[in-house]
Length: 66
Image (cartoon, rainbow, N blue to C red; front, side, top):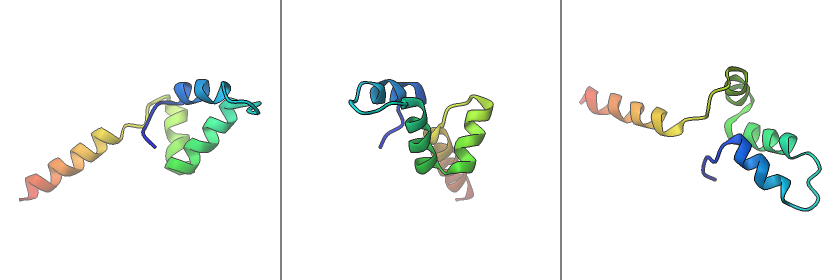
């Protein structure tokens, strides 16, 4: 599943029948996908989960090593 953002996911879930608390469901999905520690850290700081940047920097470090 690609990153779409918490608010976008929450909006999508709100449109589904039977979903009574889309915010809680979105948080549950995020914790399952990213892990509790990483998800809570991003939520506490108000930052986005940014995989592309982390992957890019890891690739750059690997190239630099040679």
